[in-house]
Length: 188
Image (cartoon, rainbow, N blue to C red; front, top):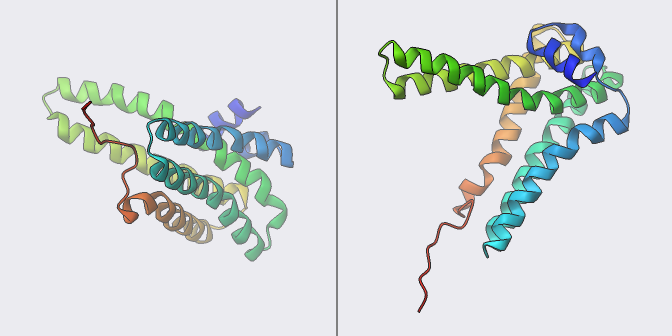
């Protein structure tokens, strides 16, 4: 069901939203991998002896992951669509993984463009821009169809989600702490 829903949403078919569960178990299952990866990253930083970066990185990434469902809930409540928020948040969590096939497709297209003589830097920028636009469109599409919003309300939710998740994601850089231990030490 999840894969079918992802494929439908990836292609712009609103029926894909119906493939996601509406219960707390489905939502928790969609959050599990998004929480596991920051935990592993924090453990790696901790093992490297960088506990400050480990803690800040973990908290920043957890806040980034959890902000999207909170934003979804608040806007669903605001727009009188509270009963639709859990399914929408679950679909949004799973749609995060669309970045992987998008990167594969972009790499394929990029390699073709380089063969036609375009510079690698230009191709990389164009391909990354297209991936970003696609992922933004996908999030907007899920907001619009999951919460059954008009175009402008879905755009408002998208912009709010970008602002809040972007702020949490930028927190480690704003504090001046490195994201991982980059200090090279030599033996005495």
